[in-house]
Length: 193
Image (cartoon, rainbow, N blue to C red; front, side):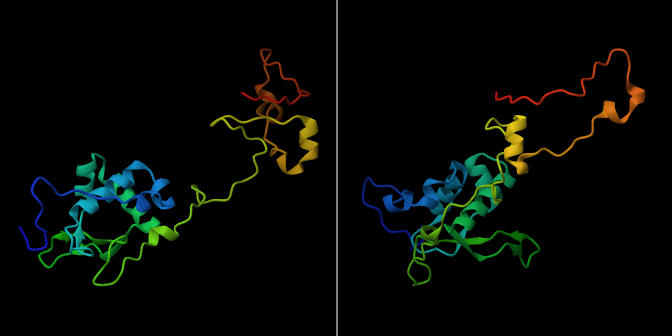
């Protein structure tokens, strides 16, 4: 064992400690389980003195939490965006021509004699899609379903008017057959499912 491991009392074992103030932060409590699992794996690699030198590749993280490597990479991005970790040494090709994974520091812990930055405490919840919500006119709360507005609702909200869509039966009279019953003056009804 290296000198950095503190001698444990009899009956006690190494463990990962997540303090209450840490878990109650908005950045942690609103995060999905995948990034949390990667953070715990990163913290498992911390031995008391190696903050900033924590090594965990996407492949090893994916194996540890039973997911795909690309998925684990997304979890690392989430941890970086929320301020739980910082990259101290980026991934690179070593002198032997073998790829080296990035090294990380946990912001909840001191780094090189400096106090912990705890960047995740300043994180604020943002719109998950990253886009501004558009008008809900003509849309339903049920995913994949659209509502059609009544004529009087359309006249009250001109922004809710649907774009004029081409009607193939009106544009191409050659496709009319005796089986087609096309009503030109059909009403728009509101359907909410």
